[in-house]
Amino acid sequence: MTDSIATRIAKIGEEIPPSVRLIAVSKQVSVDAMRVAYGVGIRDFGESRIQEAMQKQALLQDLPDITWHFIGHLQANKALKAIELFQWIHSVDNLKLAQRLNRIAQELSRSREICLQVKMRPDPNKQGWTVPELLRDLPLLNECQNLQIKGLMVIPPLGLNDTETLKLFEEARNLRTTIQGQNWSHIKIQELSMGMSQDYHLAIEGGATMIRLGSILFGQR
Image (cartoon, rainbow, N blue to C red; front, side, top):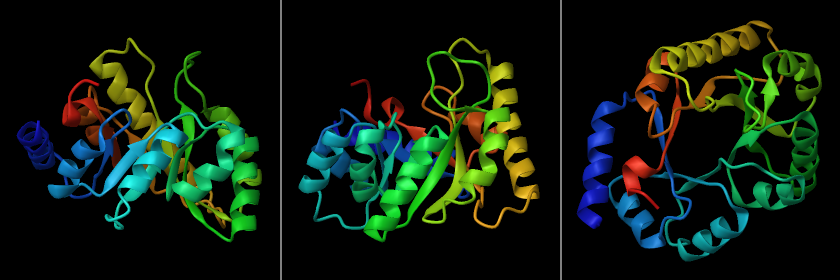
């Protein structure tokens, strides 16, 4: 297992340009496997369950330079723990959640880096803003002064072919450009968190700055 994880990470690393940040999705992955990944240079780990992340962080306290990314659906009642445990929260998917995180960050005197989850296509299986909803909510998001709103998170719906997937990623890049052009005082969208094990090549081509890879690094859960 050790060799295979290290080999996979090395192979993927050769394919990723320096401008793209590799987040190893470690949900349902053992702490031992995470230590292997750390040993070959991984410093960014993505988790989607608060309780699992708490247990892993307790066991990995000797690795203080890990950056923890929350990438799963975040329930409002878990917002406090998310602020406490994670430096990045990728899956902020509605205005009320953003405002709640902002209040908690202020109360705790902590600032967290945030991605706004956007649905570039209709998808009943995904959370997130539609593009018109996001553009409408930007003035209120700009008031969330205790959050560092730095990126967009995009997950394509199932069933798209490669051409359709690439077009979606390119549209996300164009949305980032549109938001940047509006010169918000506090919203500084630079990152595009998009691309997983099955489509990361397309995501990189489409402009991703962060890719979230799990099974291709660690194998099937």
